[in-house]
Length: 359
Picture 1 (cartoon, helix red, strand yellow):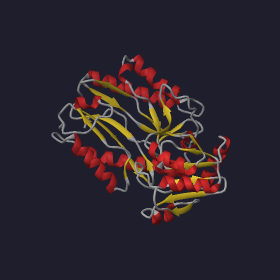
Picture 2 (tube, one colour):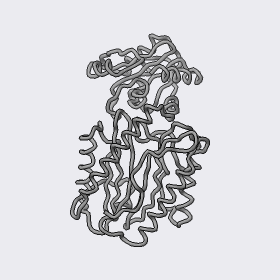
Picture 3 (cartoon, helix red, strand yellow):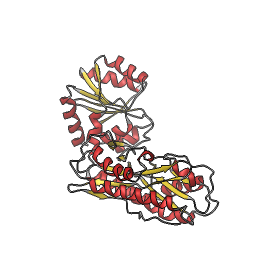
Picture 4 (cartoon, one colour):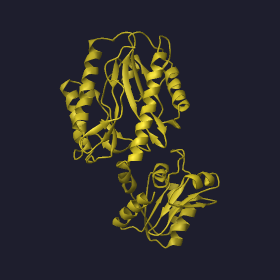
């Protein structure tokens, strides 16, 4: 992890700071190699020009000693933020950058009181470094994507009349873990029929019927990295020409975005490539979310592909490309691939067919 710490120190110095502190689990994994639940604060990292410490209590010490690279593992007792502030004070630093995503206002107050110096918020300090994936990171994301695709392929035959959305979501999550995933990237989405018009709908007791749309959005975590995949199918028969129209439009929009991805273009420009196709088809008001987002240690990272993103794409970034059209009370379509930005364009990790498939 030395090169990551060196890059962080350079950014800290450029920001006029002489230290960095983080309780944000994804950022701490990136800096140390320590893998734990991303929604539970279990460590604090303190970095100065000459020191790098990983603070944790006795519940995590043994795991940290096995996983943490490049930082001194320091077991603490009592309040983690107070101990971190005391360590910063001991090192004599005066102005410390911190990741505001990693702790609450109350925790921040305890950190500030124990430190006594200036704390400067900077969520971009580390997130901008994390945007460009190293080869090992992109390989881990590719492997997680392949695992998820294998599960999707093998679960599709389970779709039969009468099965519920919740049944299939549970089967997917079981198979992901059984085949080596440490968990899901997010709660699996399985939606039937008109429910598919809900971009982030929750699987329920809706039973599959002939002529239903089947929308599945899924992903897993493997080796500390996430995957993301969405495909839309129909069961037994196509609901009607309207569905064929929005499916073809979504697919064309996605291909236009894939063709636009290359170093030097902005997230806004890639989004516009897809959104323009959907607008020309008369459904832009039914595409209400951004085109995509970065994927890595977290399922949603920078860079974003949306109407506001001025981030310039660079080789090594991994993003989703997921246009959708959602017609209330009728149904929706979303097609999503994972993509690595390369020197000349992009590599699409997702290999599952995008042909309209009748199950």
